[in-house]
Length: 161
Image (cartoon, rainbow, N blue to C red; front, side, top):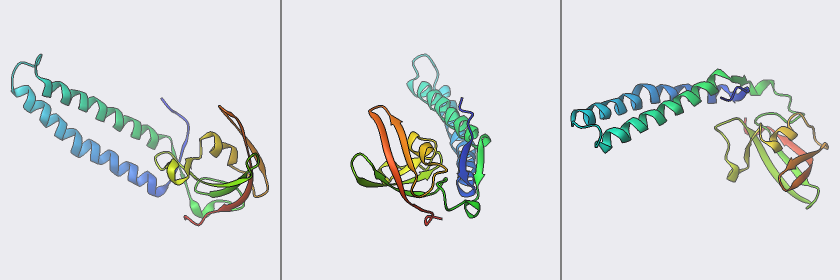
């Protein structure tokens, strides 16, 4: 089980609570109903619908448990209290790759908000962790399977807030 702290905004925390409520109070009873219907059809050994719904129930419960674990380990980030001079959760960071001399932008987000195609990376990822707490002008090295990425921080922006 993951037990590390999960940074998130109040909005993300509330969304997660609402999602758990939906899963527990709407989707779980629907599956229980389908199991009861399938059970009523008789022989459970050869009842594919019954077994499929039991499996769905188990997967849904695992999803609920995972989301509850995230809530239990959540710590709320108040965007208004962030030091905007250094990289933190919700910062968009422009960096120069020192080996290739090209620029990239990353927005550091919490679990559940990552979207790698859009440049939204987890603050706990190797790149995110290396950037956290750094300031404009700092150089960072990120060990990755293919070697080491070397970045210089060009800008830190909190315009998403």
